[in-house]
Image (tube, rainbow, N blue to C red; front, side):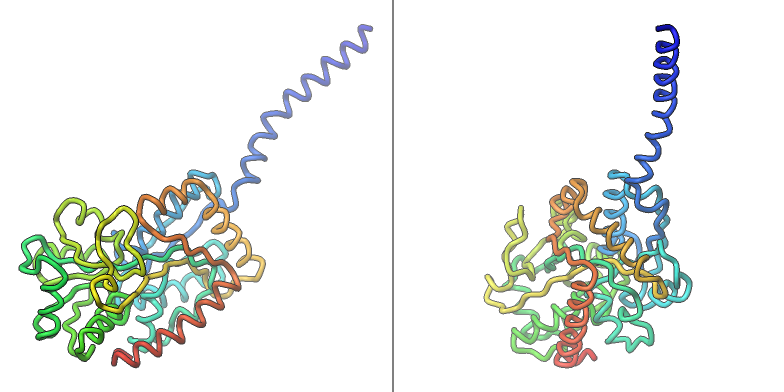
Length: 326
């Protein structure tokens, strides 16, 4: 009996000693990457920056990634930062760049030698309607007033937004066309990101602005901007801002955002990043972020996203040529 008890006691000690070793192994199994390098081809405060920070927030809260390193390089709708990412991060399996429809248009408009085709599609994450805003002291109290000014003389109504050839610029061109004017008459003022565009609108440097709703949401809620219309098919949840279609302007435009990997990675490394972003998308933290920022869930990963991208590039090229922007 004594020998049997000693064996049982020894087995219990061995089992107890093994428990601390099992815990970190379980934690490491849940963690997909020790670290992620997140490149934002725009300045802080805009939609791409917010998307990258949201991924970090959800991934770290869920224990999927140990740490994140960020780099922001803005300009020309991502065309300044994109070549830097492609050249410096080639073959790095833990590097991601945020991009989207703005980058598609900017590459075409700027005739850039390096475009969104040169990075590896991982996942489309969100889609967001745009919003047309004016400063609070603007003489345009409603959409009808701004539309009348644009119809009378587009060149006298400077409109600020993201980079030239991006979603905001395309939206203005489509609006002018719907109002019976030539899109080439637009007085469009391009900014490197949502932050600089906000400052220009608040400072009265432009008569109006167009951007994704989330970029202007806080200013709208605080009464520092007046929202006149949105570019979506339906009203943005939680707001009473009418759509352009409701106001008699047959225009819709949405801004999608996603993440891409560096060129030169292997298929297995690409799949690991797809699996990571798929896991991030499934977290309750990500769902909460979508609700808070009024982002539409437009998740599409891997080959399906790559197919969507090819189609989007072709459609954007056609629109930009039609609007005289390419």
